[in-house]
Length: 521
Image (cartoon, rainbow, N blue to C red; front, side):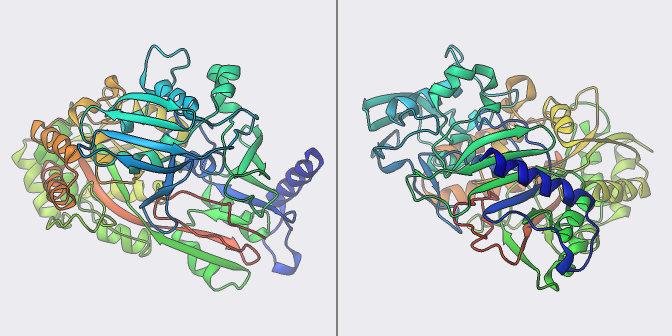
């Protein structure tokens, strides 16, 4: 395999300098090896410590969870758990596990491994406790105990009924890692991942590639590909050039300007899939101009979101009205997006007694679901300045951007771009808008928004298992957040990717994950 991967690297290097020429002269990627152009370098390959979809796209090919999303849906189906039962009171989930499954390091997958994984995320006294600096282990805060009933049976006891529990288990934070590998590598496990998934980790060369190879013993059938190489190419234009030059087989997050060209070229196939995505700007509600609700609303009226969707994103998104994306169509909300109304924006600024508020706006070069962030940031800046804001943009590479934003905007910035792809209407508001989710408490409420009524509704919605009641509660969440405007609501994206024509079996999922087991060349 080492010789094969050296040839992969050589081909990838050639693609960097290959001219964009006719298809007959293109570079060729190795047979059986899929080269994927990613938008950024991963932070880690430990699913319990990362937050970005960019990383998740790799991780779901290396690990499995107890359950997973059924293809084409956000409904769960069995994975490492063959079946499960839920007690009548909604507090106890009992999972029957698959027998004979091994981690890539040769150790056994069993109920003890499951217990180890969740205690590692939830028990601060666990010897290998590790959730990273900004944990999504919030997803499992309802868990009270995890009990091994026998080697292939594990029981979760919840503190209270929690409607999104199974969906959260299917989310990448619920992927199961090898306890043996964690014990061996400790804090460095994220550079030496071991799961049960269809592909096994081979190497990670920083800022160059992550390589995974076919797992011939995969419990659900070995993948067709010999290997996958994930290459971080942060600049969108460079990714496009590499794709056209033949150095990539798959490119995720295609810039809108290039979609038509790929569609009209028989050498490529364009995939699109709607999903629960929200693109917004976090506003610092704790200090500065945005501590005043009227100024936050003014910003929402000032920015022409429809123009951004039509002209910058070229119809690949819709205008956002709040934190619950339209993909959750069972949540019926009458809340409409803020219209573009510069006069209303100026009036609100005057009412708030601020003439020309000065803002620092964090923008990223690119990252998971960030939708042409530099161009979008510049357009937002121009619209805000047209009504009287004075906006200074600071631009950062994705991982540096995340470290700054996730730590909170206090003392640093007034607003910051952000995007989330989510699995349940609970996830985004609970992790980013709840009073108890402040950065100081390990959450993602980087703008310090607090509303006790919203907190109460979010808690009630988590405990409610009746779908119609949940729908009404999340409609109320949408209404409250829209009015309070702790964010600049911008867009809901339709994700896309382009593949070379010889790539078969590729599909995008509503979860925004990238499952490659069924792909071939």
